[in-house]
Length: 284
Image 1 (cartoon, one colour):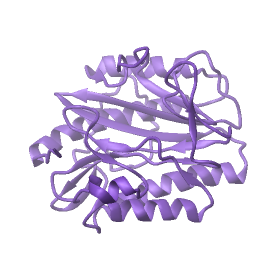
Image 2 (image 1 turned 30 degrees about the vertical axis):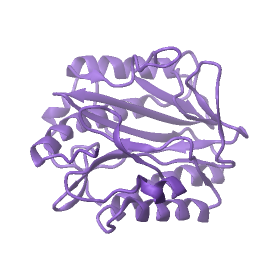
Image 3 (image 1 turned 45 degrees about the vertical axis):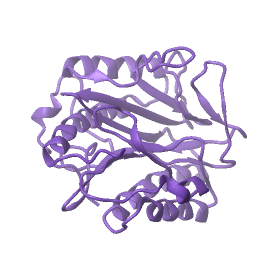
């Protein structure tokens, strides 16, 4: 069953989403050569503790429980990269995914950041992945069914010579991080046969395109979590939590002024996101 949320519930989710935006802005400010992925994760964990929110990722069950509050995936790592002693270097692209629960409601977002210099092709990969998420946000205000959005997303990525990861998809979100429906970034027989859903007020979904430079295939690393491209080529990942309202799509994980990117010039660990305003998220 797909739960449709009331305006009051969506407003509560916006508060969680704003904390997530600030957490990713903090992480973004630390993405530079010499910093370890573990240092970024610990900074986000301290920030969440300061805000009094529950991290969504730490302790997620698996063959081993997930050990961190962020997933940090570098270069050929697609998703679920475990932060640790790995240092960042010029030429890396770094995907950071995190989420939290505030007042019983969840927010979830991700972005890929570039450490120059990178090739034009790598820069285009990141740009296309960012742009296909923005395309989806806009289309959520224009289409009636998710399959219509997913078809245009897939076409957009393929037109640039990249591939859409099919092993992982977006999801509904609310009281729990993962709820119905599944939200693929491509059209499959499964979607056509009964996985499709209406775009209607009250729907809240996390849309998260993962785009590979080469093959769409991925493989699991021995840590039981990190997924890498099968061919070793780079991958990029962007995500926002989006609500459908009577006025169209609202990005619940946007910044205080509706920013869809995660850039901030202010210190993040001591600043309360709930003092920053921005009760309404960005729209497309």
